[in-house]
Image (cartoon, rainbow, N blue to C red; front, side, top):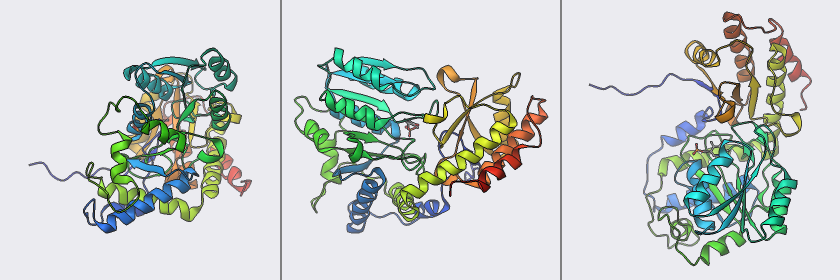
Length: 395
Ligand SMILES: *Cc1c(COP(=O)(O)O)cnc(C)c1O
């Protein structure tokens, strides 16, 4: 007979999921109620306004899609483009290539703006591309590229998209809650995120937000949205305003208790405070990793505090190190993706996992495992470097 599943508790310091706050785990265990229960509808309204706060927007269409971040990506493309449309997609890592794939599968014409992995999207290249493609209607890019640890200048890129009368689609999966995200200030038309990165909730939901202009485009489509489940015209019959909410699909009721709790926690801490915390812990982790002799591959100006991409010491089998961290320390860090596979580790400090205990734990565990495989690292100096960084901290 198969018995109940009881996972070993891990410390999650990879590219997601991140450690889930215990308050969220207990919210998930509360009694399931109906998806049209008046109490549940009150929770839905609160989730919408909490998401408006997290995204810094007044957009009415700000809701969680009942599926992971990838479904939020697909929701934006399937609703905002039609077959034959020209779409400019900026690619500087794995998630940009997925956006381009979405456009191709939906019968659109992809115009790529390509930048090296490990560098941000170039606003100049985007402008030059739009000058040559004045018939494009959409610009898409990733704000925080989790495959490399790079932040692109979302404000500048959205402003250029607007100049050329394009709507913008921005991937905020890893940025939301961890670094500044301001949809209204930046003029973002469609953003999607995920629950399992800096919101530290369980995986499986994708908060999205669409501007008035984006909603107008969805409502005035000539061809129907090709996905029934992701068609926002239908989804809004359930998530929209007013008392007459109609059944569309059964909402993931308990998962939404979890998202609600994670957003309550974010509001209690305050957005700016959360961004500062991510930065402070990043600086301490950086001090420790650099003291060991590891190097960041992303320049400081556009490095993400929540996703630290570092080189692997010569001669070290990176997969074996991750395996030892998991087996001996219950610590998960991430491997490189795509062109960076085998070349880097990606160490996440996302949401609840971004704390001094994890920083010290990770630096010490890495030091011990790397010492065990005779790697060339500087021994016995990392802990002090971390402590020094905290004592000099910005707050
Ligand atoms: C994780 C991630 C996604 C995909 O989210 P899932 O919840 O895994 O589907 C998309 N974009 C970026 C930048 C991500 O980091």
